[in-house]
Image (cartoon, rainbow, N blue to C red; front, side, top):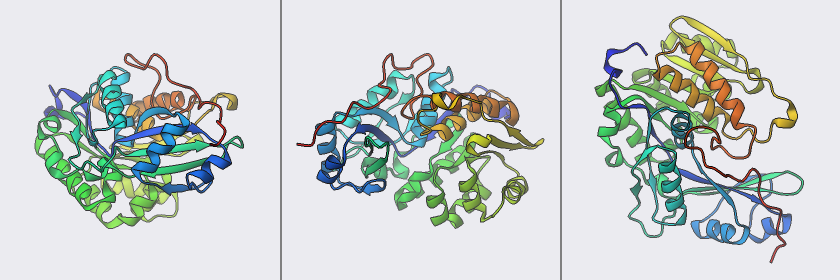
Length: 345
C-alpha cells in the first residue's frame, strides 16, 4: 500500500455490505417443526417468521455479514472503519446501529422506506445433537442501491471493501460497481471479496470482469477463488491471481492461508489451538480478511498482514458468533453459547 493517495485518509477500511443481524438459538426438533425449519439446511423465511422465532426462543444477537464483520474487526482492534449498508426501522435495526456505533465504527444507517421490510437476519438454530439449521430472512440489506453509497466516506478510505452478497440483487450489483468506480477515482484500494463460492459461481463472468478492471485486492477462501478463476487446483489458482497482478489472501482453513503480492506468494500457517478451544469457525474468514486488510492499510507486506489475519481468525473461533470479543470497544458481555432449549409450546 505504498501509494501517496492514501496518505491522510481518515479510514483504514470502508466496507460496503449486506448488513445482517446474526441470531444464535438453542432449539429442539419440535421447535424446528413448529416454525417449518428443515433440519441441517438453510431455509428462506419471512420477516414475520423470523420475528416469531426470535420472540419465542430469546436469541443471542450479534451484528453479521462480511462487510460488518470486517469493519468490526478493524475498529475493535484500534483501526478506523466506516460501514455503508441498509437496515429497517425495527428492533434488529436499532440493535445493529447501536452495537456498531459502540464498536467505534462510523455508521450512519440507510433506512429502508418499505414499512414491510425488516432488517436482514440470519438465524442459526442448534439442536441438542449439535446439528445447526439456518433460517434466512431477506430484508433491507437487499434494497441497497447506488444512490445509497456515500461518496464522501469512500473518498476518505485507504481501502474500500465490497461484500459479494450484494450481488444477489441487480440494484446491489449496481451499488458495488458504483462504489468501485468512486474508490478508483479517489485513490482508495478496491477489495473484491469472494464471500460465497455459490454466489461467485453464479456471477463468475461479472465477478471476474470487476476483478480485472477494478480490484487491487482479492480476499476469499480456496473454493471461492477456484469458482472465480474456474480452476481445479490451488497451484493453478495462485498462478491466475499472480497473472492478474493483484494482492490477495486465499484462506484454507486449518491449512492456513496463501497471501500474494508483487514480491511473490507466502504461506501463512494457521495458529495452532487445542481442539477443545475451537468453539465455532463462523466468521474466521472475515476476521482473517479484516486483519489482512488492516495490515495492508498500515503499509505492511502481504506476508506480515497475513500474520495479523491469522491471529484475528484464531481469536474468533474460540467463541460463538462472528463478532470479535477483544479490542478497545468490544462488548463487555456477549453470550458465549445459546441458552438451553425451551420446550415447544
